[in-house]
Length: 145
Image 1 (cartoon, helix red, strand yellow):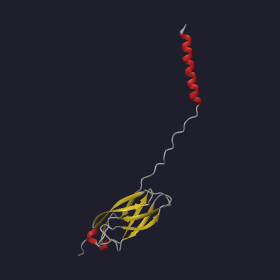
Image 2 (image 1 turned 90 degrees about the vertical axis):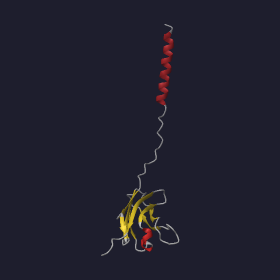
Image 3 (image 1 turned 180 degrees about the vertical axis):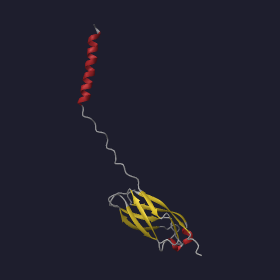
Image 4 (image 1 turned 30 degrees about the vertical axis):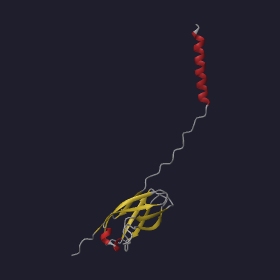
């Protein structure tokens, strides 16, 4: 029975390793960053003609309490500055992470109407890396009879 002491030693070593393993404190998993919801933006109406006087911009997924600027970066507002764009006011995001803002258009698109026809991007930006965009289509008004 010369193998019995060797087997006993192996079992003793295994038991010792198990005891040491069980007595060590458990390592906590690394903290995971909180998942951030995606921002979104809706423009109502999505299609306007050159007679439109306002649109409603609605956003969600932003940090509550932050200020969001609404912009139309591709609009031509000054003939000598291509794509001079328009940035309007700031709106405070509510506790749900959402906002609603009415944008008056009386003197914006209509300065250079033919050059502002087509699809534009509306942008909401809180300068914290949270940005949302939505399309806005500007068309000619129906011809009057």
